[in-house]
Image 1 (cartoon, one colour):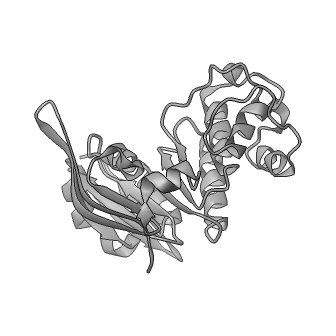
Image 2 (cartoon, rainbow, N blue to C red):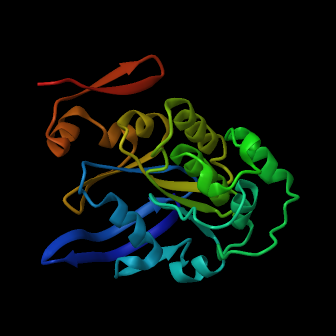
Length: 249
């Protein structure tokens, strides 16, 4: 399978501690990938390293990642958005039409694709409000719409379900799954069940290193997950799906 991202020698050290050590990594194209692991495993650091912020060498679709970033071919949603701009929700999401993400005084407000996404993510009734006035979950959904409007072939999402209720979590993940032929996604997820249900490629991390990568069945087995998370985790295969339970000790 063709690589979406290829990376070598990603190494970050802070205050004498190694927080990322990835000698080599290949993330497949045409599939959604989830980075999982316990707190402090280096998931978000790895995601940012794919943007060229982790030293080493990173290629996107066979070319230096910096070239693709300049061309707007990689969209990004971090954990903390910037919502203090004097913009309405509609104007904020339309920033995605400009790959630089720069603020424009008079963005184009006539955009059917934006209207459709605002409807899908339950933001149509809020499009005239200031982005700063929204709740955390509403702002997160607007940030996701902004990134989707970039129409980039790759979407990097750092905890995209942060602040979202269960309905909007599954609505987002289902939408990404439906659009898998249009773009590939690399996302940090804490919820093992979301990762197992919606991702086709799993990257399991621990202490800044990749423990395993591959399909859900290859990576998300009870023994490996319990070893990495240091907690009892049960895998339950039911019908066409798989889900995970964590029982108190």
